[in-house]
Length: 166
Image (cartoon, rainbow, N blue to C red; front, side, top):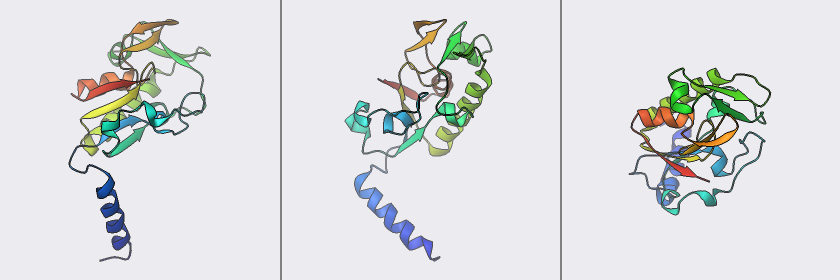
């Protein structure tokens, strides 16, 4: 047994007392866990998350950061459709400066899907309205519209259930 193993086992034992280790882990928008990953560098309160998942292993993800975009970053919106259409090459994600950032969003979706696969996640709780994480609504051509974000659409294609959080 190496020197680091006893500490690791103690941490695992502590975690098992406060977390449901039998249920698959859950992906969560990092900003919903109080991490300053939003486009403007702020965080949201974890109070938006349902109580029933708080005992599960939560995996924070910020698709925009994973896709290589900085924080803070300009606001982004869809042009020509939402996340599903972006995955099909029929819509674009453009920031408020007019720069096309679609490739960063597509790269992010692939990375988050890989994280979900590696972790065995079957559910995600994502920030509603985000061009990556939106579940039921996003901004398209300057207006709120029905649709999902790029990462949400990719996860749903994998059969992962994604729940919206405001």
